[in-house]
Image (cartoon, rainbow, N blue to C red; front, side, top):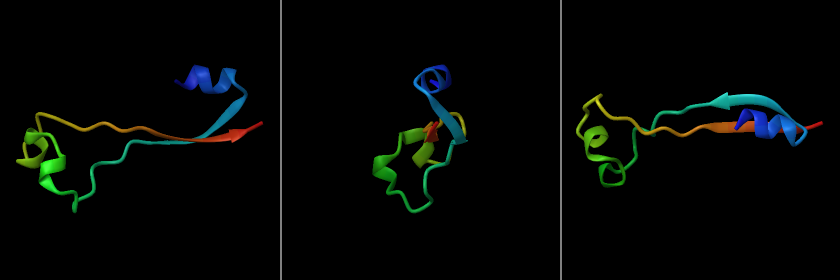
Length: 52
């Protein structure tokens, strides 16, 4: 992803990998996350890009 962004002429200002919000309804989360187990995870990456 980072190579594609920079090849397209963007500067990566920041990358974030936030955890699910504590107020996310449990039915929207995978069962292992909703039950509090730490054997599973939800992974989202957010990129802030700046045009050069």
